Image 1: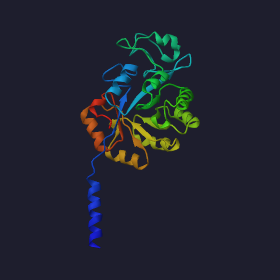
Image 2: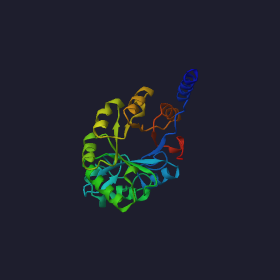
Image 3: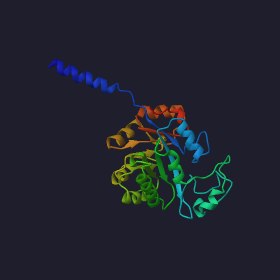
Image 4: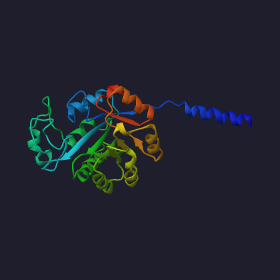
Length: 251
């Protein structure tokens, strides 16, 4: 009997001393801290830095294609102005992003990565869910990608609902910019795999609550070493960052 009690105590102590596991490293808009965000060279840089995954943003342009860009307007990042959704792809091709880069399509990004790392596609614009599903299914059929290498996320939970209606195989992550616990109901409704919260709202307690509900935690955008260390201490499963090398490299 005493031997059994001793074993139980030792197991308890062992569990309490387990160090946090290394989180997945997710390049934010590619490697935004090094190369113009959401461009093919930025994505290449992130892969060179050894990320596990890459996060990008998409809009649907006026001619119907999905383009990879973060802002609703072109003003901040390009030599053009106005909403990106108002332009056709031919016009978008002529726009220069920061240091001479161009705006890629989702199709081009998928072909570049080719399943080497996973891809978190944020549905930034409206009416992106159905076309994203169609493009992904084409890639799956060709064997270029597997569904387990894709995550679909959005702050627009209605758009996530549309995606879930047509595709229940691809993982969904709920984006939220305030109390991450508020995302739990929609995460359950959509059978999400993860919640992607603003790291500033995370604590050891709410991370634990989210994980106990069965969801992974992928906070954004964690760039400073002190914040990165805090997220690792909280035991998050992945870290979205502009500087992948500050977190580590994939195994």
